[in-house]
Image 1 (cartoon, rainbow, N blue to C red):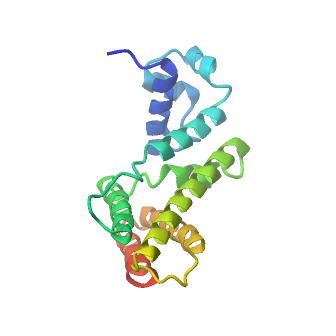
Image 2: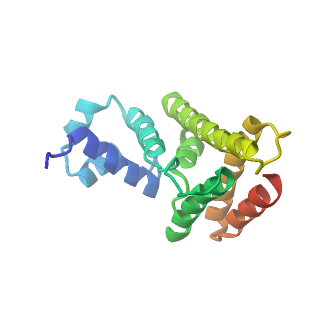
Length: 188
């Protein structure tokens, strides 16, 4: 089996380290040590820690499994199942990590244009996916057709990210339960 490139090892390690500790708490030295690569290797692949941060957000968004299939479920149940998987991950991690995209956005949006841009693109892509699911649910008669799917898609994602922050603060699943009750019990 071929060895992964040093660049890939650095990015994979940074995903874990940034998610676990946050961007500011991880130095280039911390990441390269955890990756088991020389610190100089970092600068062969990245101009800066900010560029690595943007790559980490993109990688996390791509590898989230958001679009994974959920059997023969209808569009609304599929959307609920996708959020349920993420809820379970948060609970399994005892509410310590949150969402890496949201974490990077809240930590770096005011300080790093490159990370802010990537977080914005990732959130837009994600809300577009939610919008597609809502459109499919409307076509299937599962969600009222008089509701703007784009507005709902953005709102559902914003509500999710807010619920994650509240969950981390409260160290409780209650905000996530509220999200499910309101979004899938009343809104959609």
